[in-house]
Length: 216
Image 1 (cartoon, rainbow, N blue to C red):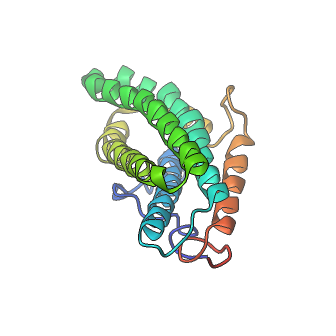
Image 2: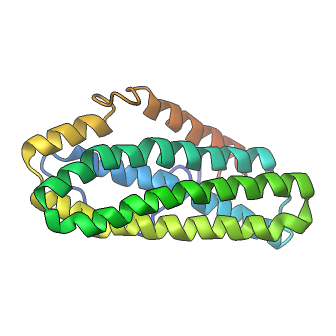
């Protein structure tokens, strides 16, 4: 499998080094890995859109639908709620000066829900109408990718360093358990495995060089 899907693609923000202190703060590594997974999907969508635009590929709507579903289901329903319920809540308590930045990220989470609905609608229209609606779909993909890379950069460059500086050991115990899937009453421990399986399915559907699916 190529580096984009198997290696989960570098995020535009993936420069933050997780703590090396044994098993402490393992949630930071999980957050970064989840960011890389999402970045891989976004890179894949952009690659496919460019290939279609340059007449090097024909649209695979089953693959696009799986990618959009992943973006909707994973960050919007799984990753972001855990950030807000655990990491953001505890950081706001320990460092009140982080409040405005946390408010901004909370608002971006809400904006992301709107943008993914727009992306899903653009894909459905492209599948139904065809070539005349391709540009609108391509613009929606580019808009969502740009938005989400900027969002992840803020989290990695600003929020995670503040969290390492201000959160206590007991805070990290709670956050680590949540991100490991051991203490999340909303989602349960198996949800992460389900999204990992979906990620592998997308990799198996996607053609080289972004996946290991059949050449097109």
